[in-house]
Image (cartoon, rainbow, N blue to C red):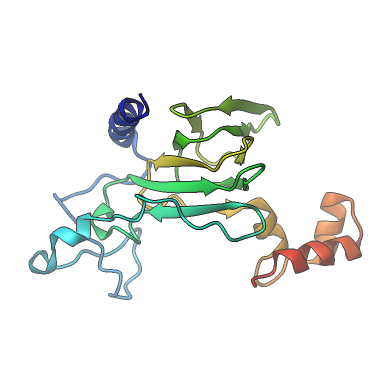
Length: 217
């Protein structure tokens, strides 16, 4: 049943990509030349003679990733940085693995894409917040699908006793991710303490404590 559901999900991602967020391509393929150093809206194209089948291949989502962090989840991307052939095609995937009993993909946004997830294993509580500050949430189980609209803050958390995992589809070759806590408390240069203390109605000590916990290890 899960395999059949995943087939439906793949078909849905294919349809989803038609309404892609990225600009339309102007040629059949434009395999990303990530070593060129030239910055454009995307990546410049490799010479056709240098393109190989490996530019369109990635096996990194086949197995669960090792989760070894304080939030209890790991995201493995399959975007243009991993699959150069995705350049200009306006679609990408990722796999998210969650530890049992509360593994969390913390509140974050994707500024360049809508996200659709398919639950491979486990049970999750998921949700997003609209610009009217309304929480739209749902408990998911294996085989379920849920959509997070472009740019809205959203999260997923394992609510079960077993590991959980999902496959995510995006209508962008590089959707981008901004984790709310890390963005505000871990930026470089740092957001001024007086901005954070006033925004969150907390003291400077609390701000510094949060910053220390989110600092790169």
